[in-house]
Length: 89
Image (cartoon, rainbow, N blue to C red; front, side):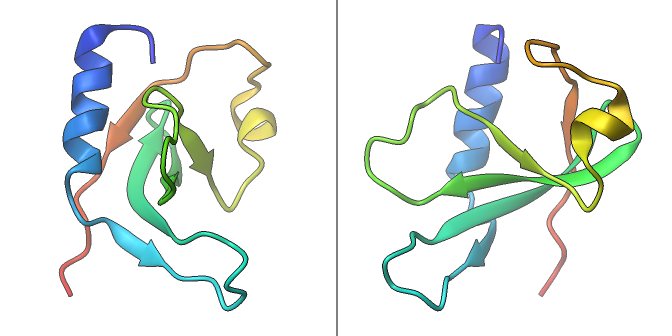
């Protein structure tokens, strides 16, 4: 995240429940997931590990495709991440 507005949006997102992932192995941490669109074309999710002292500005992305390959991105590239609405349970 490169600007204060992005950090605030991310902090607001973290205050919502997200989709919880609970691992079978108790030695792993739980996480909250939020659906996103990466660079306007690749569906994915933000994965936020639910651990103490997780860096405030760290954003982990997953997708069913290899993100770097699908977007022809390299380390250090800035990606646009659009937060999508959570599915209704």
